[in-house]
Length: 205
Image (cartoon, rainbow, N blue to C red; front, side):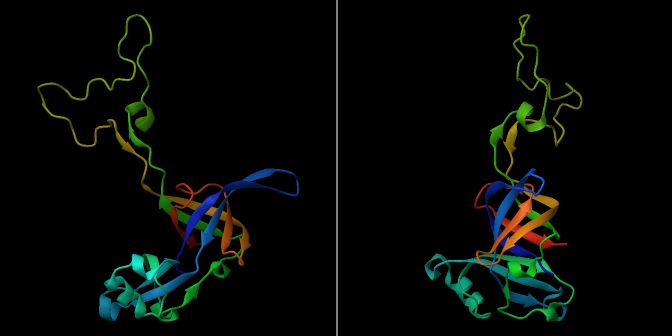
């Protein structure tokens, strides 16, 4: 099965029959539409393009609208491509929903993590701080970053202050606790990347 697209709704908790609180994430999945099928004979590889999140035509360009017309799909904001082994198993315009998932199964969820902005070494790389007393003025400073005259430069990859977060993260083997097909909602045990509204890719294992 190919991956589905959705977005994070938020986190909450549910209680088991034993009274234990389980943290869960609610994800709105689909409906997704197959907007293009690529084959090895024509494109050099087998893949399926999936579209998600219907929007107004005015928010899309004419080339995007023309591309979606080939599959008779509605105006979709997000398009993502997934490699497949047997592209003949799919058809243009085919709809993919939460009904393609099964309660109790495991899924991998991929999305952008929350951006933290420009941060220092202690927050970004977990550096220890300097002494706070005895006249020390080095509390959160990075300290020396080079070796002096030789080699006379800073090596690439040096851990320093900079932008933190906003990276593509994959959380593996999250259990599907509940599925609400009437509202296209999936409840996953644990947390997923990003904040509410983050675009997610859900891959069934």
